[in-house]
Image 1 (cartoon, one colour):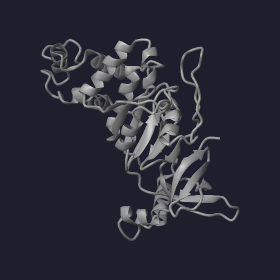
Image 2: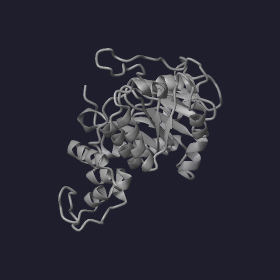
Image 3: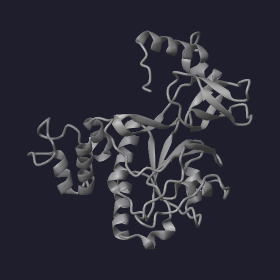
Length: 328
């Protein structure tokens, strides 16, 4: 059954009712939504949500009120207990940030809310794909969030099919002032530095399946079995999906959201200009080409091509930019 479309009047009434739930009909919305919010979405299972009450009580399974927007892990909400032991989410609090990815049909699906840093996790095996990393970085830049590149399984670098290419790839990102940390969930190397970098923030992990995101969560949780762990497919050397729903974990001094692994990350929901701006080194050269409509592919006096020739922009990054443009 297709979802019933709502009229502008109905949408207006829904927004007004949600505002009343959050108390923002009287005073400042941000202040009063904080005052009325009494829970956080820890995880969701279809139409049901696990809500963690802010008063420290036990996690409650809840339904959400009809016509609320799709809620995601990390959302702050107003909820109340039900007679049958199952609660109901009444309203959604203010979101300071949302991390989302496109799905089929051009629909953008939120993955996590109220996060500060996105951990882009990669590993020596499966071999990282620079264009996928660049897609993550463009999305993160567009959302105004901070990325942190994590090379997990650093103890397996000797097994990398092309270690020289891996090291060169990481050096490109370091040269662009992206933070890159090498860690091992197995040996514990680098985990202290990672935990220190995450103090006081909420972060979400993204990356290909098989890079060890769930193992990383468990390692950061001081060896508690917090998240299920899967292996690599022996047929295609790709990760097998273990995490099936996003979940928020409270760790030592920070919160972490583990999300289902994805092998593709399209950017069809953003504009060509946003892609350009998402490449930090290209953005710095905006407006410096001779022609305003320069396509940066052979036009005279192109600032980007001149930068590639001068070595200030890496050719691989420019090639990745064009690949993403072609995919829009």
